[in-house]
Length: 206
Image (cartoon, rainbow, N blue to C red; front, top):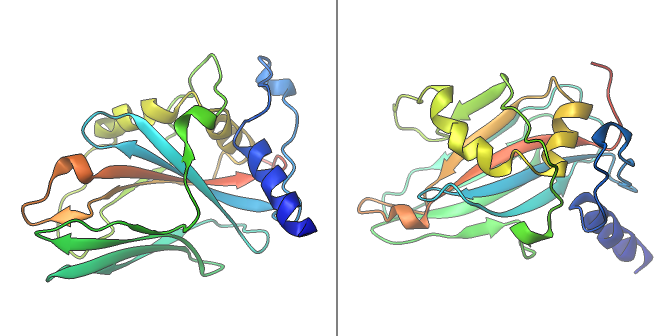
């Protein structure tokens, strides 16, 4: 019970339920308790480029070379996508993909944290050069130029947690993936972008 309470306190601190210091260089460190490193996920609506919700997954230890890998199962009728952190084999996200239907996010299982619960900063963060653009699928589809993802980045660029990710771990790659739970005659209103970032609870040497 005590550990669960500690985790919820850490989650609240991470998602910015407290006040945001306007001078971000002097921002208070976030307490992560037993989770020294985290993967943060941010969902952005495909049709409106609006930040929808986010989630976090603790990693089981320090990761010096953060990398994500996708396990994609083609939707002949029913398929799926699962993202894991390569070095720890920690599952980060999974969802079903249905041909001529609509799949859904299956992991994380707990409720997502709504956009309104995140603290924001006054000056948006510029899109980093280390973004990894991926389909995560078996299809031989060209990946658009990075400039095509500027509206996606703009949707989350004012979040305090995004600022901390880039400031405390600037060399870690950022992954952007389009989750399409409905394919075939899919409805783009069902789709959303996922942005994955590596979060540290203390600055790492640049």
